[in-house]
Amino acid sequence: MKNKLSDRINNLPVSATLAMAAKTRELKDNGIDIIGLSLGEPDFNTPDFIKNAAIQAVNDNYNSYTPVDGYSELKQSICNKFKRDNGLDYKPNQIVVSTGAKQSIANAVQVLVNPGDDVLLVAPYWVSYSAIVTLAEGNPIEIRSDISSDFKINPLQLENAITKRTKLIVINSPNNPSGSVYTEKEYLELAKVLEKYPEIYILSDEIYEHINYGIPHFSFAKIPSMYNRTITVNGVAKAFAMTGWRIGYLGAPDWIAKACTKMQGQITSGANCIAQRATIAALDAPVSKIQYMIDEFKERRNLIIDLLSEIKGIKLNQPKGAFYIFPDISSFFGKILKGKKINNASEFAIFLLEEAHVATVTGEAFGCPNNIRISYAASKKEIKKAIDRISKALNDY
Image (cartoon, rainbow, N blue to C red; front, top):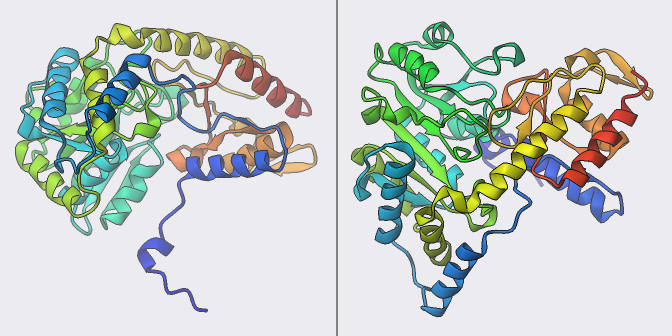
C-alpha cells in the first residue's frame, strides 16, 4: 500500500539520541552486553523527599485534569525558584508548566515562528531544536563552533548570522552536548549584538543549570535589555533525576506565556497531576538537597577525561557543566579500523557500538560533524569498563 503519511512526518528526522537508545535496547534484548552512554539520563533514583510528595499527592486524591498552564501552587514555586536561583522576577501569569522542557521549547517555537522565519541554533545544539523549528516551518540556521573555542560562539559570529528573516535564537548553557558554560561576561557581549535587533527573541534552555562545576550559572533574561525578549526554559529531569516524570516549565513575557497556554491546550492540556505535586517539593528544596549528585557527576567527568586522554587520536576539552564529554574524533576519518573505513562521526559511533559494544551519539546530530557525545551519567564502574572497551577497539590505530 502506498505511503499515505504526511510530508511533515516523512521529512522529520528521527531523534539521534532516541534512535541509538532503541538500537541499544534491541542489542541487549538479543543478549549482547551493551554499555549505554548515549542517553542524557541520570542513573540516580529520584530523591526520597520528592517521591514522598508524590505518594502524599496520591493519598490526597489528586487525580483530576490539571489547569493547562499548571497548578497555581507549582507556578508560585517556579516563581520563587527563578527569584532564588536566577535573580529573575516572574509572576505566575508568566509561567507555563508542560510535559517536559521539550514541550516548553516546542510551545515557544510554535507561537513565535512563522513559515520562512530563520531560527539561529548555536552549534552544538540539542538534537531536537532543529526538528522543532522545522515543524514550525521555520529555517534552522546553524552558528558553528568547535572544540578550539570551547564550543562557544563570539559576538562577530552572531552578528554575521543575523538577517532580516531572523526571528529567534536558541541558546543552551550548560550545553548539551558539549558541557560548555557561558559566563556572564560572554552573555553580556552577545546581548550587545542583540540589542541592535529588537525584533529577535531569545529562547534560553537552562535545564542543566544546577549541574555546574565552577562557573556560576547566569540566566540570559537577567540582562535588563533582554528580559522582555527572553523565554527561559527549565525543568526537573536532569538535576533532580526525574526524567520520567516529564515536567518542564518556562518563564516569559505574559503575552508569550498566554500564547503557549493556548497552544498547549490544543495538544496535551495540563501536565500530570502527581508529577506536578512532586515538582513543588523539588523546587521548594534548597540545591544542597541534590548536591551529592552534582559532586558525583564532577568526579565522573574527571575520571572519563583521564581515561579518554590516554587514547591516541581523541581530542578533548574540559566540560564545565552537564554530564557529557564531546570529543573531536576527526583524526580517525579516512582510517581503517578492524577492516572498516571510518568516513565520519556517524560511522565512528556505529563502529564503537558494533566493535566495543558501547553506545554513543554522532556529533552530526548536534551540528558538529567532527565529534561524538559520550554521557557520563553512568556508574564509575561502567565508565571504566566502557572506555577500556573503546581503547581496545581503537588499538589498531
